[in-house]
Amino acid sequence: MEKPKECFKTSVGGQALMEGIMMRGPKKICVAVRKPDGEIDLTLEDVKHHAWQKVPFVRGACAMIENLVLGYRYLMHSAEVSMPEEEQEEPSKLDLWLQEHTGPKFQSFLMGLAAVIGGMLAIVLFMVLPTAIVGGVSHFVPLGWSKVLLEGVLKIAMFVIYLFLCTRMKDIHRVFEYHGAEHKTIACYEAGEELTVENIRRHCRFHPRCGTSFMILVLIVSILLFSVLPWNSTGLRVVLKLLLLPVVMGISYELIKLAGRYDNLATRIISAPGLWLQRLTTFEPDDSMIEVAIAAVKPVLPERPEEGLW
Image (cartoon, rainbow, N blue to C red; front, top):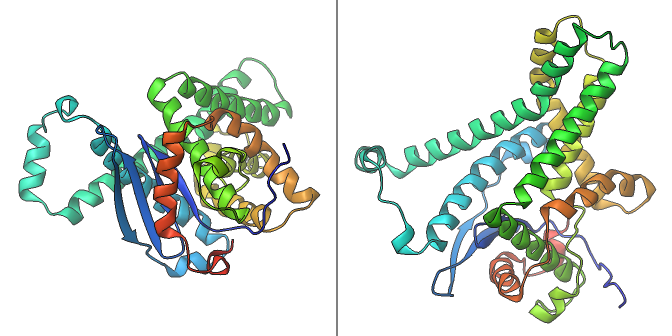
């Protein structure tokens, strides 16, 4: 079968959720979640635009924080909508107290704070822990220049193993199937085809402009950038890494933007690690998942495709 060709590159993208998908267009965000009764619940809101979105390298770290906060909120929403009422837990005393004594803005702040803390813990796991391990080993075994190589291998290996273990979990595997539906739907739209289950099914589940590609690029850029940092103090190296993290995110974000805009040997090399890793973070969806993706993307599409170009 001939692979469908891409007609244009769109900025429309999304995130897989629990039994649902969030799609974000130039002006609107739509969250579509499959309810226990089979119907699709839709939530629509406006996209908020910020001045930092136009500042190269600065926008990378800001976008990461924003995506963590919004992603966590939509994930919690999808879990609540998709769960049968009889399986929903009774709110705890703390939840009841917060509902009674705080407003929606404060509760949104708490959810955002939880997302940022979760993101920071992930950073500690994949960026700080390898440094601590290599630093500890070097006290007993002289490693020399191979410290950088060993740290990089550990960092990538831990990330890949983490993703592989996630695929073994049934609920997460379904999220990754919805991730595949999201990618295939965007690819169908970029090919200029009508958004139907039959058309979308033919498209590839791998997409160069993906959060997975951004995450692996962050790791690769960090390995290259941090290779020049001193090893005489593990603690100092960790502190310098944390201080340089916004720089790493900024560079990685601009590389993703670049790879998404052009198609040449350099951009294909940039996209290759992320596309390979999507074998772990995307799976072939069923037709019901594609239906959810269609429901999520249609409300956010611009009237003219050129309004939402990458």
